[in-house]
Image (cartoon, rainbow, N blue to C red; front, side):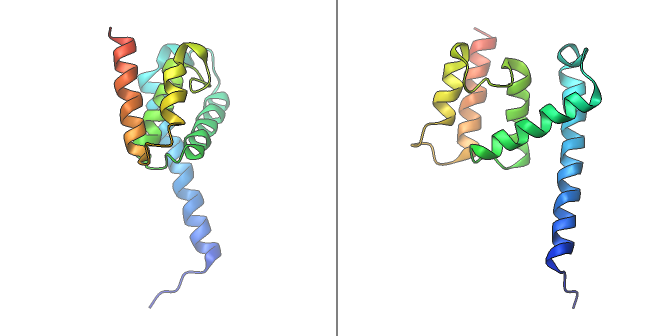
Amino acid sequence: MIVLRSEQIQLFDELAERLFVKRMLEHVQIHFPVEIEQLSESAMRDRVVVQIEKAKSFGIVSKPDVCDFISLSWQFGDNFDAQYKTKWAGDILNDTSIKDPGLKVAKLNDKANQVLNP
């Protein structure tokens, strides 16, 4: 039987996180080429990492949901959850009656589609 020490598990977690950040950078480069035109790779990475942490602060941790959250941040701005023009996003993210983070993200996507495609 293989026994993993906590340090080894932590290394696997860190590797998985780095790979996810890399995939999200690729996602941003494909889907938001205009928005990243003036940004360095380091600036893009920093922004992606901040958005991953921000998603976690709202309980959003599944990779597809975090990816959607990152996409919303590139569409509407880093602080789309706190801006007046996207008040709807903050309302959804802070709605304590919605317990499922995936449902919050689905509601965010629905509203974003309504805003972008009136």
